[in-house]
Image (cartoon, rainbow, N blue to C red):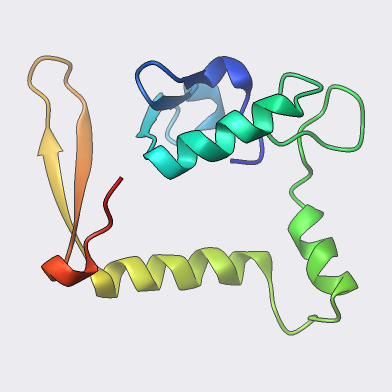
Amino acid sequence: MVGAGWLEINFAERLWTVPAERMKPGKEHRVPLSAPAIAILEEMQKIRHNDFVFPGTKARRPLSNMSMLMLLRRMGRSDLTAHGFRSTFSDWCSETLTLKRNHDRKTGDTFRVVSATSPSEAVRD
């Protein structure tokens, strides 16, 4: 998310397309955007001042990878790491959600379908 640019966001299709050069496997990555994500992006667009969804303090630069770490330090939370948030979220997803891998024969894309483990936990737009 840190380097997300406005040109990567397709509001009409509710899709964020991360270019191959920004992905570790070197392959374009497409992320469907939920209604709440679109709402946040629409708000961010109102305060847009460069090409990045989350702009940094330096001109024409995205938010730094160190921003979250510095925020945690200013909060006096040296016991936490930004990677810890990602890891915790990943663990929660694994424990709470069912991920099913699908393949689109037309485009050749592989994608994951996410569903809650019980209907009461389902997230809806």
